[in-house]
Length: 380
Image (cartoon, rainbow, N blue to C red; front, side):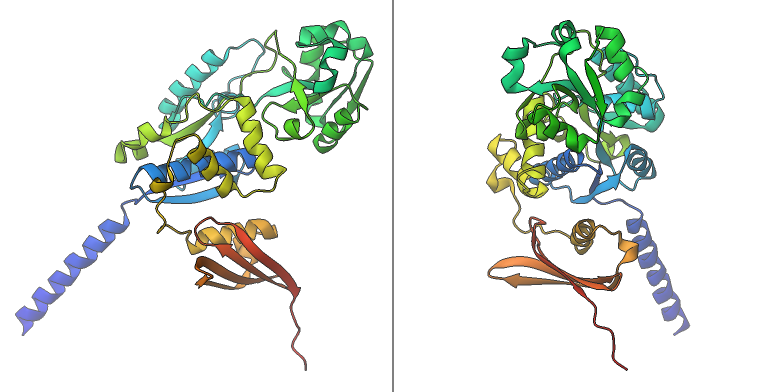
C-alpha cells in the first residue's frame, strides 16, 4: 500500500509540474493601442487580420493609454504589439531631438535599428500615411487665396487670420515660431483656441488657416485641404506596427501578416476611416472589418464565426463607454445569451450609486443597448 501511494504521489507531482510549465507558456498574441480613435482602429484592424489569416488566438487590450503606457506594457510582455508613429518613437522613446529638415527615411532607419537593439522590438515598414502637423484652409477658398503650398501662403500671410491649439505655440522646432521663421509668415491675426473650435472657425471663415493633423476625420467633415509643407518644417509621423521580437520568433507566420498593410493606407484613406468612427459614429470593429474585406485583405470566409469576445473584453468596452475603469465597478454580472439568433453579452455593474446595464454583440463588440439607473436605497 505504501508503494502504491508513493507512485500515486509521484504521478500527481508530474501532472502538477506539467500544468505549471504549461501556464508559463504564452498562448496567442495580445494587441494593444493608445487611447485615441486612429490608434484603437488600427489595433483592431491588425487584430482582425491576424485572426482571419492565422490560427493564432488574439487578445485585445485597446485604449490602454499614451505612448509611455503602451511601450512599457510591451516591455513587460503585457501586450505584444501596438501601433506607433516614427516621429514619436524617434523623440519620446529614443530621445532624439525632432529638428526641422530631418528626412522621413533617416528617422525610420534610426527607429528600426534602435528599437530592435534597445527594446528588442521590430518596427515594421510604415502604412503610408503621415499623421503630422499641417496648415489647412477651406477647400472652396484655395482658388480665391491662390495657395497650394506654405510658401504660397507666406506671400499673402499679412492678410491671413491664423489659428492653432495652445500646444502648437509651445513647440520648439515645429511649432508656431518654426512656422514663422521657416516661411517668413507675418499673419494679420493669430488666435489660440481649443482644437474642437478651430475647424468650425475655418468653416465659417472666422479663420483663414488653421493647424490640423493630416489624418483628422474632421478635415473631411469640414472640407478642408492641407497645404504642402514644401520646406519640410513638420517632421514625419509615419504610422507602423511595433511588435516584440520574441513573439515574431514564436510565431514566424506573423511577419507576413504584419507586412500586409505596408504602403497601403494614405492620408486620405486614414482620414476616411477616422471619419467613419468619429463623425458617423460607427463601431471600430465594423469599420475595421469593412476596410479589410472591401480591400481584399481578408474575405468573408476568412472570418471564423465561432470566435466571440471574451467576458473581459466586453467588460472593457462597457467600462470605456461608461467612462470608468475596472477597479471602480462593483456587483459585476456578465452572462452570454442568444437573442433572436444573435449571441450577446448581458452586463450589469454598479458605480457611484447607479446601476449600469449593457447588451453587447458577442461577435462584433457593438453596444446594442445601454441604460443607467439610480440604485434604489433599501428602506428601513
